[in-house]
Length: 163
Image 1 (cartoon, rainbow, N blue to C red):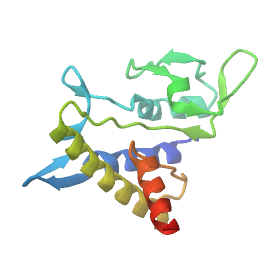
Image 2 (tube, helix red, strand yellow):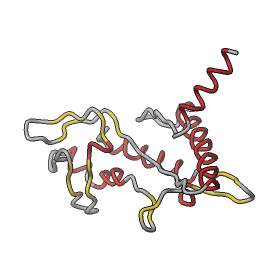
Image 3 (cartoon, rainbow, N blue to C red):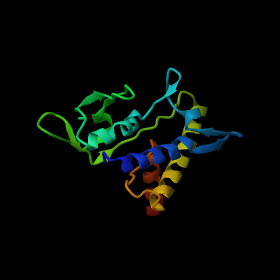
């Protein structure tokens, strides 16, 4: 996963998700409008900024130190266990390979209206990411995706098919 072409597709995926918009109560909303905020900022998948140093990593000029490191270009603090799954390390705790990367998006749900807007956005998210994955849009990544209501929705579908 730690290749530039993979991170280019992860950026495309992030862009699709960030720009997913939903019509609710007479207005259009994108992720930036419904995201859970820390201060004034939406949660950022800053792991995507590794693309700034992947060339050096691939050339063996830079180590990715586990469990965290400072990105020398962006000064992001990358906490790898939050985003990486199945990480393989060398004897010095440097990352050798990563078979899975997780991106996360949080919607605010402080009020009933915000919760409903978030639920609508999640449905759009599932539709957009599903279409991209199923259409072959991505050549270097395979996307597994779910939303906070995915389990409830699947259980409801299963119940209806059994009746």
